Picture 1 (cartoon, rainbow, N blue to C red):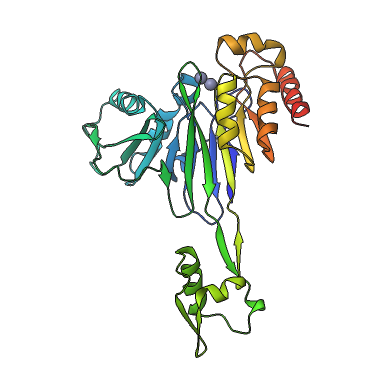
Picture 2: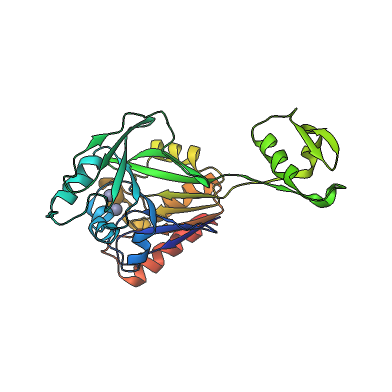
Length: 314
Ligand SMILES: [Zn+2]
Ligand SMILES: [Zn+2]
């Protein structure tokens, strides 16, 4: 299960930290200036996801970098076209003569276009961009618990919206069988996952075909979490959102303007309260959370904006 935490106060830039139950590492979405992001959060990060590099989404990368130096691990950074050079340029703005070579390695996965991901690696002290030739994986990000899908939205610049999809888990209902647990449970789950239906499973001296025991298994659907940042509230963006985030369990969505300011939203390729609510409703998102509000609004106006969003959802 995903356990996302908003790390930015309402009047700060956007930053969302994603944790999972029983998982040691976390995932940072957006590097806006966010006072609730801690040193430990940065040190425990497995990957960073950036929608686009407007300053309010990328300014705090320096803070993250500052605290990741010395963790001696590989951290993946996913982001839009141009992210590789932009990460490198930020890093090269500092002097690195005292750093150890294995202090950190960044693997950058640049989403050039939908389906085309350019991978490269940069590490101290020179921080040259070294292309990774083996681009056999076409999945943007995948670990043993989940994978990440994406779509590129139009914000007058590409803005990547991410969908985190947890793997389904298979549980055995041992009470439905006449047997005790044992290594056969693991073998049965493996046969189910790999569709090895005729695999022989030995239980307490008897042999079964795996498929004859599948009725003992229950599939628990994995969790889903969307992060939809800056985008114009137009038909083509909404179509992409509706396709990727259909029936998503939880989604954070940009809600930069109040409904009365939709003209500003149009000019700046942003969304606004009622449009964001409408598309979340269309997607059937179970829990939609409005985030990333214009700094021109006072706290009272942001309350009104959130109210507009909630009314739009209902
Ligand atoms: Zn932006
Ligand atoms: Zn923004």
